[in-house]
Image (cartoon, rainbow, N blue to C red):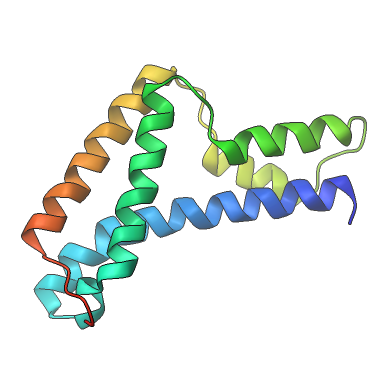
Length: 127
């Protein structure tokens, strides 16, 4: 696999994590209202909460996401090669030119919202 393809694969994985986190934040309250059983699934809700906690902690500690670090290392190895077009699009979606404190605040608030969802829409084992 070429370094450019590896960068794209890491970016797609990163985008998948972002979409998973956003999906959970929307699907849980909507699914509770529409009585979707899957929104009470214990393991995916726990994975969602842990994923959001990891994002919030990394931002609070001033650390970049491990996927961002991995992508950066792969981009360094592919120096001189133009990035694939899909990588450029995904970069624009994921990376915004804002100070770290904005992200840290947002991620902590989002994590707190997810904790509230855990309480308001209680997960059930076997649901």
